Image 1: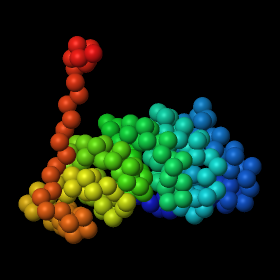
Image 2: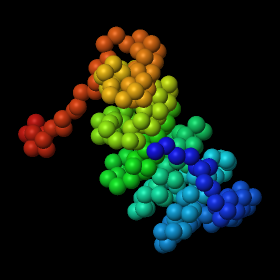
Image 3: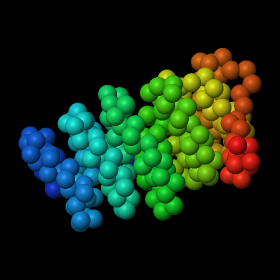
Length: 232
């Protein structure tokens, strides 16, 4: 499920990539195509954006707002390519790409595209790993996704993202709940790869944060609106 922007680049994509790397006007036109009425043009533009982010991510920095806007296009490919590009911008522009949170959350629970779900999970895990407060914001969503996709093929790749998350600047309470979530698989997981990767993350968290009895996140049940009104 994990994919690389540099896989299977064709001649048309290479030519456009070379063009936008040399010419700022060509890059501006490419960014505008993310909002084109043509689905094919949007997808092609998003593909080149992802390729560009793998080679020259800083060229995309002035266009972060347009990239985030592209997360609301109907087709999955445009969204996953743009999410991959935004993920590569996290190290240098974490604050700015944080505005992609809502679009990434929606993509994470897309019912049709596992590729889109993985790209969203990767973005959220990478962004969440960049700062303690961000880790607290993304963790409830990541935790829900772990439970939703535990039996799916992309879950193995999601574990690699969780390792990045576990190694990042995450809050202690987040580390505790992540360890609690992975503890069963780390000790009793079915499938050698899932068990081994879960154990790797679990052991890292226990050692790094000196955890003694990790607990899974407690699901918060929202109050009924009527109850809120009565309390007022």
